Image (cartoon, rainbow, N blue to C red; front, side, top):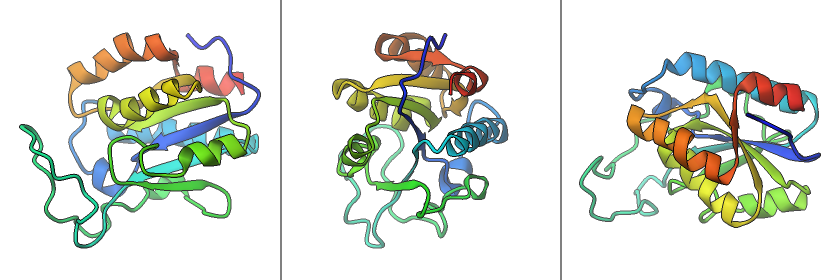
Length: 188
C-alpha cells in the first residue's frame, strides 16, 4: 500500500527497451508497458522528473562485465536496436533524463544520483524489467542512499515468477512501499 509520495518524486523506468521486451517474461509485456506509460504520462503532466534507463554496451563489448556465471552466459554481441527505448515511451532528451547503464543497477557507473539530487528528488518510483535484476539492484542502491522508494508492482515483470514474487513480497516491502500504478498516480 502506498501511504504517500514526497513533494519531489522521480519516476525511474528500468530497461523498457526493444531488446529486453523481446525476451520471455512471466507477465504480458504489453500490459506492463501500458502501466509504465501511464506512470510516465502522469509524471510528465506534473512536470516531475522521468528517468528512462536502458542497458547497452560499446560495439566491441569492452564495457560489459565478463565474470563467470552459471546462468545466462554473457552476451557476445548485441542485436541491432537492442538498446533502443520502446517507442511507447516517447523518450526525449530535452524533457527526460536518459541513462545508459552497463550493469544491472542504474546507479553504478552513471550520473543518476547526481541528476536526482540536483533536482531535489527524495522519492524514487520504480518500475520496469526485470523485477529481480535491474529494478531490485537499482532499489537496493537507492535505499542505501536514503531515497524513499515506491514500487509500481503492476508496471514490472521478470523472467522468473519466483524471483519476481520474492522481490515484491519480501525485499521491496523492507526498503519501500509497494502498490499499483493507479495508487501511485492518485498520490501525485
